Image (cartoon, rainbow, N blue to C red; front, side, top):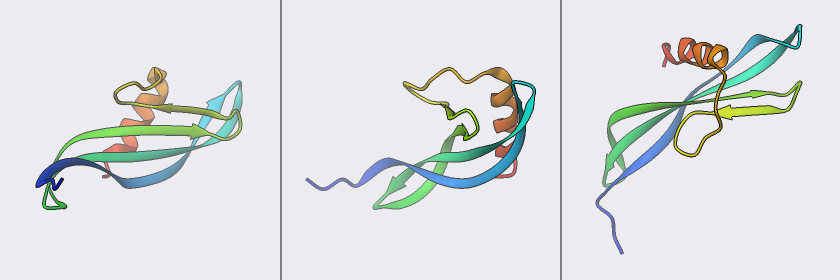
Length: 86
């Protein structure tokens, strides 16, 4: 079966930031994804952003989107701040 159009999620940016975790400063890896409507495998226009954050110090992973874990508000604000650049 051949599809003419579809939806694709692409990684548009990745950044490392410091966060306070249990009273200590820890590194967090924040990834920003964009959902694109594509036609013949060519991205036409973006229509949404998704964020993920990984804290290796405590091995925690949060993401936004369908079926995702609940991201704490302070991490979501940090992700949105990074997402403004992309």
